[in-house]
Image (cartoon, rainbow, N blue to C red):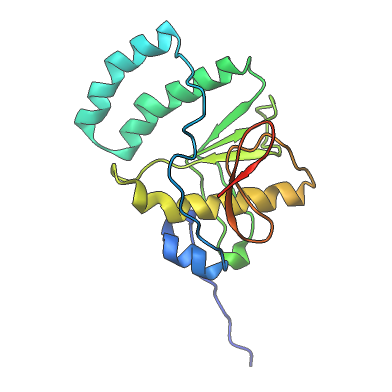
Length: 185
């Protein structure tokens, strides 16, 4: 008689930086100032006014959910408007890419370089919120979701030169600049 084997599904949020780097045999390259040359974008007067009201409340509530609902969502809507609605936003959707590797679960936010909102299309960018105001706690989840985004894009057989964050196909952690996809280390 064959025993029934139940595989425990691992959500993205269960990954630590150490577990994802070790489990996927990634090379970690730490670099300061990687966005120092990025040009700032001035927020609209509307977003500034909205955040002036909502940020104090989100801080007072002090939860990830409050930050998500009161701050991040408005910033992402502004981002979409800055891109003339040529991108789509997804929040809280299942992003089950590779159950065997544990790349399953719900992502905080996904941004697609497609304007369609009916379903997620490649290429995608993942956005992971800092956990309890401690960014290091969310790094494992962020890397796992980035790997899932890479696999999603490979599955859809698309690549796009406008990745803000990506993983080198040789499993080396890398960050790509927009437009030129120039790898920074």
